[in-house]
Image 1 (cartoon, rainbow, N blue to C red):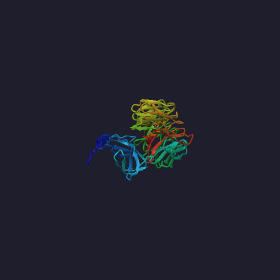
Image 2: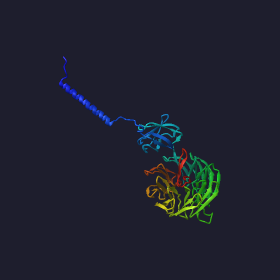
Image 3: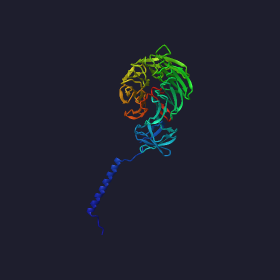
Image 4: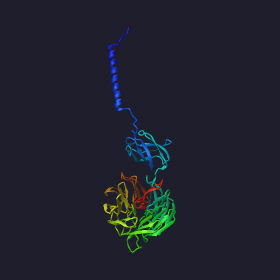
Length: 490
């Protein structure tokens, strides 16, 4: 006899089925609202393409639909990890291109195919047509302790040093793996060194010291000596010519610069003419004098700077003027009288020329390059012999008040300063948010321009000052950044 389901059991089953149905609908709706189906829309993610490499920065294009802001890993064709694109530090907007830091874990990227791999971005590949070497930056500078030093910019450790006959105030010039620097207190010497290991290649001795910084153009080295001569030497040590630019003096510090095929240099010129004024000289590359311009006061300290066909230079001792001269015809554009004479050399940034005064002048000036009008001035606590360096809207300049001063380029307002144990007479160099400079306390400093904290210092022999301004070079390719005082900075 067939028996049916009891009423109690039937009610229980009905409730169970209802609960299951409700839970199923809830679960389906919950999943639908919180986890919709992923639809692969083209370029919904950043699609990264490496267009080119500039040193160890990558020119990257983002053809995706959203911002690329996560680091992307880079692998070579063998699957080896070689580094990453630092997109999280520099977000790349959708549909745009930009220069992104490539952080490498290898010293060399070899020509070939590379892949960009990330959980966030579709994998893409790119091709490097040439090998790229990871930059290695080294600072080259001299000291009064009779040494030339080469120091790693990363940590301040010594790369090499070379022992000179006497100390130096000259700043080095580096070209194609050769370093040129002057030195001496009694008899001057120009040294040509191997910049890779500090070994001497050749030297030339003059009767007076060499305080100016050499200029290297087309394998010819130009430098001024306190014997009153401008010298030209081939890089192999053979003399090309020399020309008289004044009487023997202890103050021939002006460093030569170039304009087209012409070498330009300042001089005190005492004893050559009846005038006590200095001169700015123009020489053709064969040693023939083209012309000169008489200035009020001597130009044997300040080095000329050429920008857009105009020569800028300061005068010292008997004159307190800074000049703008036309490079093409040696005539005056304007001059501006300041509160004292100038040991420093000018630097031009945009529409402003920056130059400083010493001998109780203690002032850094910003001057309009069009009309010579003073835009702003800043007074330090002592003489300013240092030549300024401009970096990202900031003016870095040392003073005998023992500070490196950092000023706003537009207003002259002091933004911050860094104290050392002695005069800061050398011209600083700034690169990748680090200021490098020496002091008379015998230390060479590296200071972060964002945190204003010292990263490291390097000690020369105790008691010997560092007046020589540094050259900062990538020893992989010998591209260098020079201080304002050097004619190489043009």
